[in-house]
Amino acid sequence: MSVAAMYPGTFDPITLGHEDLVRRASRLFDRIVVAVAANPSKAPMFSLEERVALAKKVLKSFDNVEVTGYDGLTVDFAQKHDLQVIVRGLRAISDFEYEFQLANMNRHLTDDVETAFLTPTEKYTYISASLVREIAAMGGDVTEFVSPEVKAALRRRVKKKKK
Image (cartoon, rainbow, N blue to C red):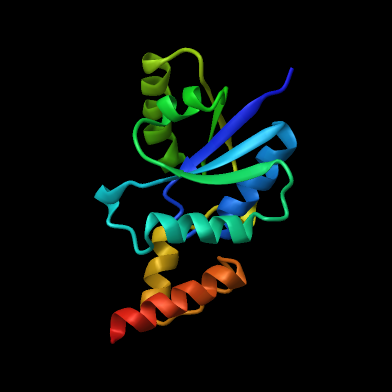
């Protein structure tokens, strides 16, 4: 039986922590869809198209991973694309309460989709996209947190905002 999963998120921007979770999930599931959420309520730094393009560049080496944008309910996307599992990352205990509520709500909406929690490699537990954006905006070095492609995109965006 082939099991397909989705890894949803805003990915604004995609970090090495995200990439680590994709690597782990790609070993567990036959197919992974990295689903980049439109989520305009978060006022992302990068447009949906830019976030999808960056994720595609960063994840191109994974044969069983595809990247696409989406809006709407995550469980609706999963059902529409025959994805049986939603993969979520837990960095710290503080993530657990929100993720637990989200998993229970998704289960309430449909029992056709399960949620699987993965923890990142220890060196990525403190990385978050919001911290990476903040460091980049203040001129800090984000080399340890993102791929070279994402680092370059952050530099361009910060430079553009300062003009």
